[in-house]
Image (cartoon, rainbow, N blue to C red; front, top):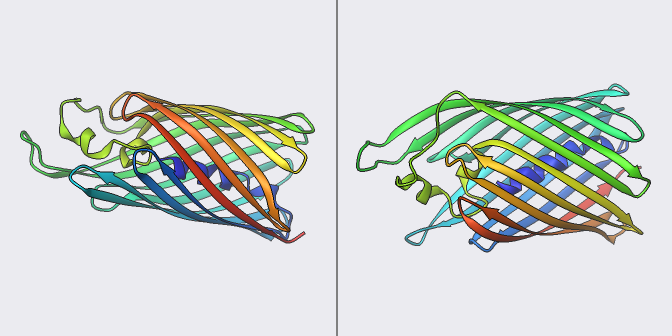
Length: 278
């Protein structure tokens, strides 16, 4: 889910704050498959080199037969930098309790210097999947989990240019691969915000960021392989962060997905950020 990924990218940047600073953000995202999401997030320095973060989001995806599916996301995290090594811990909930949801625990150990940051990431995901009745099986509930191992790195190539790369690979406790002729994929997969898109086999991406005056431009290229359908989604996103006023920024993002699962989708998001502290 794109809003989940965007929030996590924000939370991973927590130690950019001053020791007494904070960030509060609000945003919305929509796509051409009638998906819509709204998010709120916050990051606050509570002690020297220690930050707390929180986020919440709701998304709505239009379903066939004039129905819709709502899902929720909530996240709490803590980050402490021991200089030059730090640790991040977090817990989150996402999904819809009547269809598919997950409780996730994650941790990262990172090294940060003047020119680079490198992190080793781990995530444990505990899923519950309520499967609808089909012509062959009655309705039932499936429980399974996944372990993810990944790497995140950021390099300051020049004073105004940065390059980031990340990847994560998941191993599942159950075989989730579905026959394409069954109705479950049709029920859950028509938008980049659909629940089933969070069942990821692996993901990887790169970002190039450039400061230009008071503006910050970035281009993201990403690829995600789904665990359920085995299809690949390739994404490209252009972002612009620019001052809105004293102590506030606005970020515009425009992107496109090319997905084996739900086709081509264009998406647009707008976020407002408010800053405080030194």
